[in-house]
Amino acid sequence: MTMVTLQPDNEVLIERGWAALPASYRIPEVAPTLNEAKAYCRRLAESHYENFHVASLFLPKVLRPHFHAIYAYCRISDDLGDEVGDTAQALALLGLWGRELDACYEGHARHPVFVALGETIRACAIPKEPFADLLTAFRQDQTVKRYASMSDVLGYCRYSANPVGRLVLYACGEATEEKFRLSDATCTALQLANFWQDVRTDFTKGRVYLPQDDMQRFGVSDETIAGGVVTPGFRALLRHEIEFTRGLFQEGLPLIGLVDRELALDLDLFSRGGLEILRAIEREDCDVLAARPAISKRTKVALALRAASGKALPFMRLRGQPKRKKPAANGSALDRAYAACRAIAKNKAKNFYYAFVALPAPRRNAICAIYAFMRQADDVADDESIPREERRRLLKEWSAAWQAVCRGADTADPVFLAVRDATERFSIPLTLLDELIAGVAMDLNLAASDAPVTYDTFADLYDYCYGVASVVGLVCIRIFGYKDSRAEKLAEETGVAFQLTNILRDVAEDAGRNRVYLAREDLKTHGVSLDSLLHHAPGTPPTASERALFTDIAQRAEGYYQSALELLPLIDRESRPALWVLVSIYHGLLKRIRCADYDVFSRRISVPRVQKLGILAIGQARMAKARLLPIE
Image 1: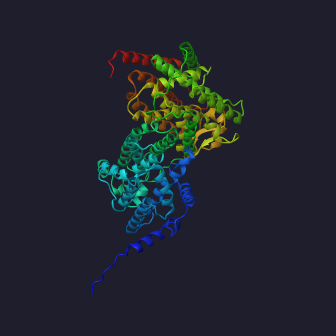
Image 2: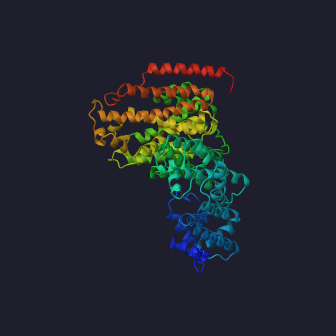
Image 3: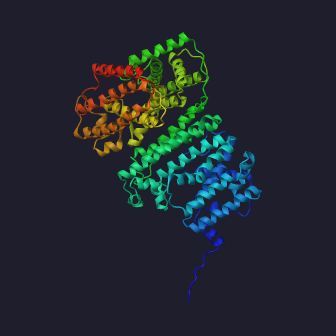
């Protein structure tokens, strides 16, 4: 007799699926009140970990319940597909969820998510399509496990990611076709960033979102992923996908300048968070198989603080912002302000000023203004004759005064006057200056006054370098001029190269100030104790272990100097000599540290003035040549 295996009916599949999920996900017999439904969505939104805070505190309170409801719908929909563990059960639950969506639009839903969502739909005039599209993606996850090309992956993102951004725009009253297009680019980029972050996790679920044709091109197979050890081909593949994703983020950034200020702050935070995921992957040398690269708590706080500081200003977008009204300023007063900034730069910028001289006058003035601005903030934060709490207060007051100037207040401070003009003249986002201030404040906020300033991992140290050096690079390339978006990542890494060089040069000086800008994990690897660096006898050469540690840091810096060389051809031709001078001086400093066998304790290593003048002479010759050649 032939045995026939009967498939369980839909009700059985649904019951088995619910059993694998939190009990609170089930559809109740009696619909909750609207207030109960809103509280349910708020709890769900606030209890789940995400790379980005959904409905962040930057949103107006009136919008937060709508964001909670949309998030709760997305969260449970995703879990119905991903957390059940059985395809048939997941599809049955997603079908039931779709019917509850229909009931929501018909006015008789029972699940708390749909009760809350009903009010959001009515208040914001949201059509059913974006909600239904998400369910299409989650059903697709049950049956499609591989994607032939990037075009196919983007087709999936059209259903899995883009509807989320459109729902946000509907909720905020910003729904237009142009904004949808830009939002789609950002949402797809966020989805792709998560894919590259989660290659290993997705593979355990049977899914590979890396395009199959790209995998074949770089010699990567399922066996590569299953083995858990990255190959050169896998790293090359991830770098390729990261660059594509970074381009999508750049494509979507103009949306920030088109929406209401409150929503713009969240969009700014989302985009920064997504770009930070890409940086986290790159910091691990694209090894997403050994462990999942994640954004550190320190970085999340820094991102939030940067966004928060932006809220205190008339919001200045990352890109695509409308032209700010140029402040009225007496020409002679502005000339005197720039002259004061040039004097500060000439007196204080031992390495930078040589590069400034190689710039045409308008760009040189702007660079000197930015340097003077940074110098003012740094002098407040680093004056150890003043107690730490007092420095925090003074820096806060100084920052508040700058923010008032940004809002149009008159100022007698020549630095503020010059910087305000420079940011207008070269379209420098004021959010970058907020980041400069946040970076300067890092040493004041990291530890108690009696604890040494340290960093656990190189990723943490990289975050510090970004705040105090990379942001400077991102400001400078706005003044230098560039068109290729790759310049931004390269400028970031060039800043890291410079800062690592400074860190090596200043090991002894920083230790005397109770600071060690080296990762504890690197100290442990090389058998160097924190105490030995903090209390190194003056004039005593480094130990063999310390030399090995410094050599390792220098090699990392060398890798980032390659980014500086790649950056040179991407900036405006008349600015290249200045960047070349700056890179040559800093790289020359690193070479001199190496030639001294990393003995940074016996004396402070520097590039001799005569060598700097020689580099400057070459830079000026290059600038003259650039002016004589036809415009590219």
